[in-house]
Image (cartoon, rainbow, N blue to C red; front, side, top):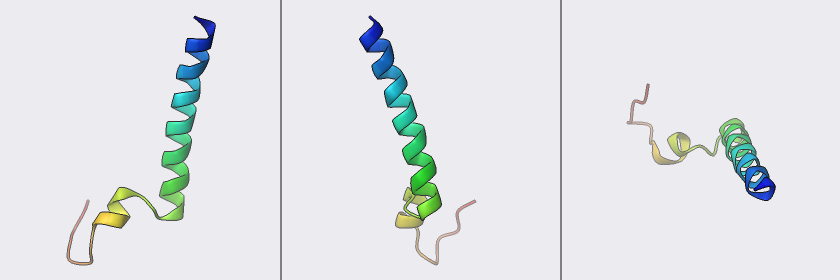
Length: 41
Protein backbone atom coordinates (compact mmCIF):
# COMPACT_ATOMS: atom_id res chain seq x y z
CA UNK A 1 0.00 0.00 0.00
CA UNK A 2 2.81 2.38 0.86
CA UNK A 3 4.52 1.78 -2.49
CA UNK A 4 1.29 2.56 -4.35
CA UNK A 5 0.84 5.87 -2.50
CA UNK A 6 4.46 6.82 -3.22
CA UNK A 7 3.86 6.00 -6.89
CA UNK A 8 0.74 8.20 -7.00
CA UNK A 9 2.65 11.09 -5.46
CA UNK A 10 5.50 10.55 -7.94
CA UNK A 11 3.08 10.59 -10.88
CA UNK A 12 1.53 13.85 -9.65
CA UNK A 13 4.94 15.48 -9.16
CA UNK A 14 6.12 14.38 -12.61
CA UNK A 15 2.91 15.60 -14.28
CA UNK A 16 2.92 19.02 -12.62
CA UNK A 17 6.67 19.46 -13.06
CA UNK A 18 6.65 18.56 -16.73
CA UNK A 19 3.72 20.90 -17.35
CA UNK A 20 5.56 23.80 -15.74
CA UNK A 21 8.89 23.07 -17.43
CA UNK A 22 7.43 22.55 -20.90
CA UNK A 23 5.34 25.71 -20.52
CA UNK A 24 8.43 27.75 -19.64
CA UNK A 25 10.47 26.31 -22.53
CA UNK A 26 7.75 27.09 -25.07
CA UNK A 27 6.98 23.48 -25.92
CA UNK A 28 3.37 23.46 -24.80
CA UNK A 29 0.68 22.00 -27.04
CA UNK A 30 -0.67 25.51 -27.56
CA UNK A 31 2.67 26.74 -28.90
CA UNK A 32 3.27 23.64 -31.03
CA UNK A 33 -0.20 23.32 -32.64
CA UNK A 34 -1.13 26.96 -33.24
CA UNK A 35 0.02 28.95 -36.23
CA UNK A 36 0.09 32.72 -36.59
CA UNK A 37 -3.48 32.78 -37.97
CA UNK A 38 -4.96 31.01 -34.93
CA UNK A 39 -6.22 33.12 -32.06
CA UNK A 40 -6.13 31.34 -28.71
CA UNK A 41 -7.35 32.99 -25.53
